[in-house]
Image 1 (cartoon, rainbow, N blue to C red):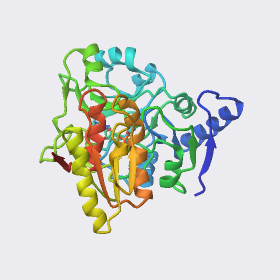
Image 2 (image 1 turned 90 degrees about the vertical axis):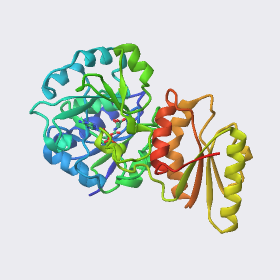
Image 3 (image 1 turned 30 degrees about the horizontal axis):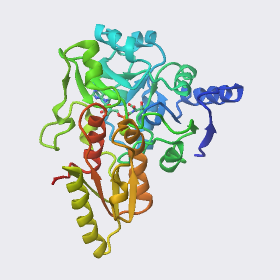
Image 4 (image 1 turned 180 degrees about the horizontal axis):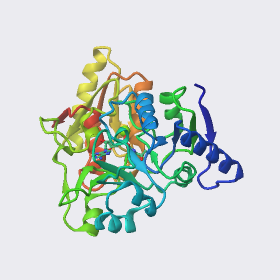
Length: 352
Ligand code: TXA
Ligand code: MG
């Protein structure tokens, strides 16, 4: 299949862009696939209410089909068709946080095929704020099932070029809307349990959710090592974002961390191994690795979130074999950064 790439400026959706979005909508309505930008990461979209489309999504990604998809909507009314009942908590959260980087789990109606929910009776729903995404959803009939637009196991794409890398020839169209604003996937909250539970941390923090709903719990598997306990979001059990090389996170006092990483790097370089470091503005100049990537300043964790997945892909491109990353504070968005880093590292953490 030949993949068409359409470039659209989110801030200037002109007539040409409208035509491209109409064409993309037709593709999805006809059962095809379109990769598109959202504010979190790029999505790989198909018609959420068409079981054949969901099957195609799994095939294009090479993803296990027990891993449910998120249904993207453009307005609140759209929920009525796909859920049994809209919980009060959903209205409260939507009021403040939708459209935006929050996914809510609710009990599904019969309109949502099990192919989309990976066999579950619940459905994950998100209303993205990206204007290209919102218009595409409208043009596609209102319901787009979309996982992140990467091949299974690779970091989620934060730019269209990474979608091209992973999905060229596997989807009908890729919409290039530039680099995303957030860079980590949405926060997922389960509203089908008595105390709403965070299943995946993201830009929307526990504190923001607590301020709206009061009591919130958090799936314990989010930051702990892969034990026998199964995460509640099926997708969280997979070792996502795995770079091709070996990644270790080093935790401790900044000077100790830099010293330890440099010692390890010297040793690896002596053995002929290509090394890399995920550093911060504060420390990047102190490292002696072959490839040093600065994720941003510790004072601006949003910048670190935005850069993380792209850095992991760059390490692959530069064939780095052994990587170290500094650890990040687990408050606020730092929790989401650490959750993704821990998965990338297969939970390999050294405390110095
Ligand atoms: O920001 C995002 O959420 C992006 C953009 C494209 O919207 N999408 C995304 O989708 O990250 P994906 O498929 O890569 O991750 C969806 C996660 C998986 O971990 C999946 O297991 C979980 O959501 N999930 C989906 N439906 C669920 C359900 N009914 N119950 C529990 N977890 C669910
Ligand atoms: Mg994903």
